[in-house]
Image 1 (cartoon, helix red, strand yellow):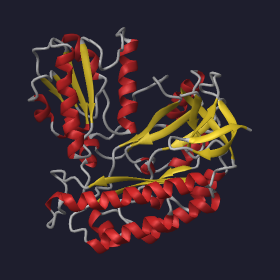
Image 2 (image 1 turned 90 degrees about the vertical axis):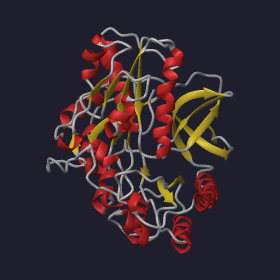
Image 3 (image 1 turned 135 degrees about the horizontal axis):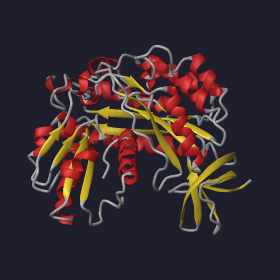
Amino acid sequence: MTLGCKVNTYETEAVEELLKNSGYNIGRFEEYADVYIVNTCTVTAMSDKKSRQMIRRTRKLNPSAVVVVMGCYSQKAPHEILEIEEVNLVLGTSNRKAILGEIENITSQDKRIIVEDIMKIRDFEELEISEVRDRARALVKIQDGCDRFCSYCIIPFTRGPVRSRKLENIKEEVGRIVKNGYKEVVLTGIHVASYGKDSGDMSLIDVIESIAEIEGLERIRTSSVEPLIITEEFVQRLGAVDKFCPHFHLSLQSGSDSVLSRMNRRYTSQEYREAVNTIRRTFPYAAITTDVIVGFPEETDQEFEQTYEFLKELKLYETHIFKYSPRNGTKAAEMPDQVDPSVKNSRSECLIKLNEKNKKDFEDLHVGQIVDILIETHENGYATGHTKNYIKAGIKTQENLSNQIIKSRITDISEDFAIAERA
């Protein structure tokens, strides 16, 4: 069971492959099993709660099973996790390969912690994948750790310093994935914009340009990046990579400069605006998505209004809205004037409505356009997938088009996805 981000998904798949190659049969979490592994998230208090719920579900599935917990929550609070009755083995966010030797010799009566001091880890842990389950695109982890220390975020303390994966290992993994039939990869990490900063000889754009040379790979995406990586040179080099998908998840968090400063985000709203404009000069139809936190400590009505107006002005494709959740150990948790939950709720609802309008407006721009859709699933008589700029679209057909890229024309926008026909 995986909770949280794309990095967690990748690491779960890598551990699955490690176990499979050692003779274990991999099943669904809901099935009866001898060993259950829960990969946890701790980005919010709700993430912790969901992680505990998943852990406790394991004993209902098999009371005598061995339960292993790994991930950010167990890295942050290993003893708290071990106190949960169901848990036998606690790993953190490093040394995942130890799981092999441990589950061979552990019983449902044992209690063990194998969690390292993540702040002392300096090398990227190689966890390899060759194939993934249930998806048309594969995640490739290229980086771990974060040194930004935003005032609200616990993740730098659970993931440690920036560690970049060697380019040759990235290329080798992408090559294996492509040979197994995958056409699209997503480069992911805890802070992918920091790729190469620990070595000083490589950057994210170098990775993109390098893997674009791999024959058979047709699409390249990246996970979340920050505004300060978006320079004219960076975007122009991306524009020269035909395989690059123009979908930028550009973290914002707030449209108010005073809130951004309290968050320690290291950019201003104007710098964010310039990043968006830089992207759109090269990619006019780029899908730009973002995250916003409402109810950050001391956030006034005026500061929230600045965020609302900023999002209204920029007309981003999609905004993921989070209500601020205090994390013990962060500076923001100690700030005065914590915002009342009812205020957080009303601000969240306000942005949700704006997001619905912005999303529809962006999708409407594509009616009549020719797009390439990578087909992922079949639902209700439609073959559905995503365009290069990550609009979900469907073609009405009974034909099995899974994992094919179909040139299509968008004809309408439904509630669930864009309607398209073959071009």
